[in-house]
Each structure stands twice: as structure tokens, then as C-alpha cells.
Image (cartoon, rainbow over all chains, first blue to last red; front, side):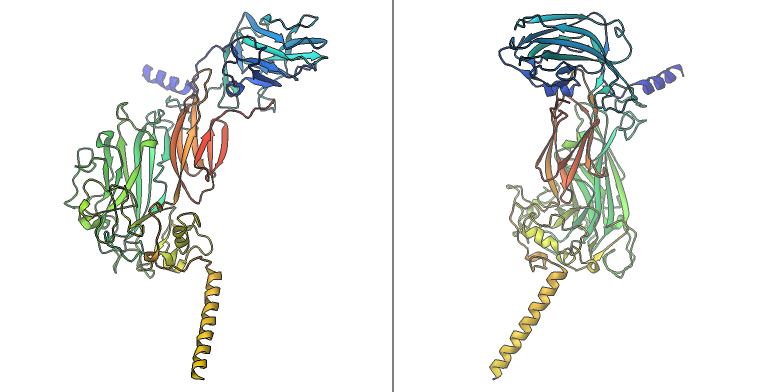
Length: 493
Length: 135
């Protein structure tokens, strides 16, 4: 019980931002690009990095604009938010030439003020050190050693140290380098460089509760769309290798796949959601998804497949299909296992009805997150396809998606098919016409026997222009749809 | 005379049919007359995808100490999350996105930094380097 309480308290107190307490490094400018220091919350005003001959140490130093102002806001360098320690601030400085009446350096500490309206939450500064370059002015390198003021030494609150360069007369600039401040870095570069704050992270996985889709489950953190499986409408013709009537309604489903990942960005599971909307076919087709390039060893378990009594379905111990090089998930073995006909020919393809409520099948594929097997979202490339009328060797895929190794290769190049495995072209005719389409969004599908171009006339323009015109041919814009030839089921738009 | 009548009739029918076509064109201003999918012909390189492939690059920046926070890539309304991950600020990252052709912009967020990118770009390069100003 004591242990449980301790772990709960630890979980609640852990900061989501995993930053440790690190000493503020010496600013030596050797990155050569002050933007890198700015991204780490240093500030620069009228100062740049320079590798001119007057640089002080290494290849780069800070170089100010011409110093002709006594204002501390004219030319400066400012630290990130830090917790100041004790000891001395040290730095090197020199002038570029001897032109001018006076030149100096002023140091100021700035407290954190959460109430102020400014984006950086800086309070009123207190000057604690002023240095005057020796006169007559010269170009010798000066080493400054400045004790940390007792008012801020070892303080538990955050400060910034502002180093200003001032001058009167002439045109000399200053160079500065190797700025060393005994302090602990306490800025959050991901949060406008404000001071680090504790963020609630109940499950202690390192992802803030506000970003965590599973704030109480340390095994899961994010849900993301898989790149080629965003919510879309799959529409198949099922007479391949012959062409059909091109109403693309033999099999119509709203389909998407999302990945659940952990705090290490490894895929924990993939959720494939398939809403079977219509069946404009006499064939009883199955539906499956291949994870191209991923072998079965990556998987832990498959749950949720709807499988009737089809003899062709042969699964391995994790629930994916046997004898496949890549992981294949049977979503359902036949449409009749999911949607029952309400009478008449086809399901949900006749405008007069009767209509059947679309059914959704959700399949969860659990992945192995062990280091040697784990994958990331970018490794997921889903390849959905239908299995025609219980003939396991007959598959229809989206254009240029490869068949699985259970598909018969003998059918390629027969009928209207012009697949060429050597060139990596699949499931297209000689005129490059597909046997299936995947269109973004949840779209209405065609009435039975109506050519898809009659329902979506801009599809012709899009295809003829090879994607250059009417990229959004499927949208519900004026002139883009012939609604009387389309069937709108619940949820489609 | 008979010939003339036939020619006139053809001309009238032709004009009527032209007028009809014009009217139809205004109702549904489609550029070509193909109404059968089987009559279409496209080149082999046309992939029939209604998504554009975009390469996303997160450009890492050296940090004083390890910093990790959430990187998200989403639609402008935030409803479609194309990617979310716990991203180390110093570590570069790259992935391919499939963005619907009817989506104009993508929003990339890293902590408090948010930038919007046009989807017409084949490569999106995101970093949190500030625009250099004198504040």
C-alpha cells in the first residue's frame, strides 16, 4: 500500500518536460549562428556573431553595433532564465577600434514577474555592475570578473542577466566572448522560453497530460492517423481482371486506420475501422488489409475480425493470415457476415431502397513494442483489398498496390488487366484505369449501374488532367455532384 | 428544294442541340464530354490518389540539455491529426504524409511554437529557430 501511494505521488509530481537541471554553458559563440542560442533562450539586441579578425577566442565572438548610446537597451546580450549560483561572472571584451569618448559594459539582473503582460514575463531590472573601458580607448582584450550580487546568489527563484554595451562618441564597436555565469539553466525553449514549470503527468510516461490521449496509461500516449489510411471511401469493382459497369459500388466502405503510439513513438496498436456501406454485387467479397513490408513477427495479437465460416480463412496464432510474407489482417471474410440484405438485389445501391444500416467493424492489431521489433508510424503502409467471392487467389487492390503472396499471379495481364509486376504497376487497365478507388472523406456512392462519371462529373476532368485540375472533384461543391445518382447514407457528406 | 429543306432542318436541329449543350454546360460546367469511365485514358504515371504526398522534416537544434515535447501535424481545424509524437528538440525527424488534395494548409506545433504551411509544397521543413530580430 505504501509503495502504491509512493508511486502515485511520484507520478503526479513528475514534470512532463524531461529537462534535467544543467549548468548554464559558457557562451563562446562557437555555434557560429546566434539563432541556435536564441532557440535555447539567449537574447541578443544589436549584437551578432562575428568571425572578423577582432574576434576574441575561437572562431566566433559577439560583435555589437556601433556603440553610441548610454541606454542599456541599445546593445545587449541576455541569458535565459536561470537560477543563479554563487561566485563570479566572467567574460572577455575588447573594442574594435579606439574611436569614441567612452565605452562601457553594464550588468543588470532581471527577476521573473508572472503578472506582467509582456510575453517574456520580465520584471524590473536592477543594475549591479558597471565597467568602463580604459581611456584613451584601445583594442586590448579585457577580462571582467564580476561577483554575483548577494541579493540573487543561490536564490531559488529565476533571473536573467542582461549584459549591455554602451558608449559615447566615435564609431567603435565592442567584441565579447566566453561569457560564464555560475547558474543553472531554467528556461523552457518549447514554451516561449518561460521558466520551467511542473506539468501534470499522471502516468509518468513523459508526455504532459494535456498532450496525452491516455493520461492514465503509461503504455499509450498518442492517437494518429496512419498516413495512407486517413478517413476515406473505398469503392471497388469486383469483376477483375474484367472491367465492370464502373459504378464503383460493388463494395463501398468508409475506412480509416489510426495508430496508438507510446511516449517513445513506438506503435502499440493499429485500429482499423471499416464501415461497410453498400454492396452492389452478387459476389460475397471479403475485405483485408496488408501491412506492406511488415512481417508477422511485429504483431502481438489481432482482435475484432468478423469471420464467418469461410473455408479459405486460415489464421496463425496471433490472428493474422497464415502463409503471408507480410502481415495480413482479414477484416471480414465476406460482406454477408457484416451486412444482411433487406431484399432486392444488392444492398444500399437502389435509390428506392430498402436500406440497411451500415455496419462498422473495428479491428485492433496489437504490435510488439520490444526494441528489436518495435515500429513507428512512418513504417506503416496499409494496403486494403477485397477477396473476390471466396476465391482466395483473386484479390482486387487499389491501383499500383501489390497483391499479397496468396493472390494468383496468373491472372495478371488477362482480361482487361494490364498489371506489370516488373514495373510495379498493378490493377490498372491499358488505359491506366483502376479497378478500385480510395477517395478522401466519407462520400455518397453511386446508384446501381450508374457510371461514376455521371455522379461525379469533375472526376473526368481531374483524371484527364492527371490530377492537375479539380483536385477536389469529390467535394460537395456546386456542379461537382449529380445528387440524384448518388446514395447518401447516414454520416456521408 | 427538298435538299434545301433537309439542310435547313439539320441546321435548326444543330443549332438547337448547340443551345442545349451550352445550357447544360452552364448548369454543370464540365470541360470535357466524357460521361463513361471506360472512355477515360490517363498516362501510367497517374496514380489516382486523392492525397498529395508531402515530406515533413523536423530540423533538430542542439540544446543546452535534453528537451522533449509533443510535435503535432494537423489540419487547420485540428480535427485531423496526421502525426503526434514525443519529439526530442535536438533530434531531426522525417516522415511522409498523405494529405487530402482538398486540404490547403497544415499546422505544425512544437510546444508553444506553431507554424502553418501550404500543402502545395512537396517538402515541409519545420524548425523552432527564431526569426532573427533585435527583439
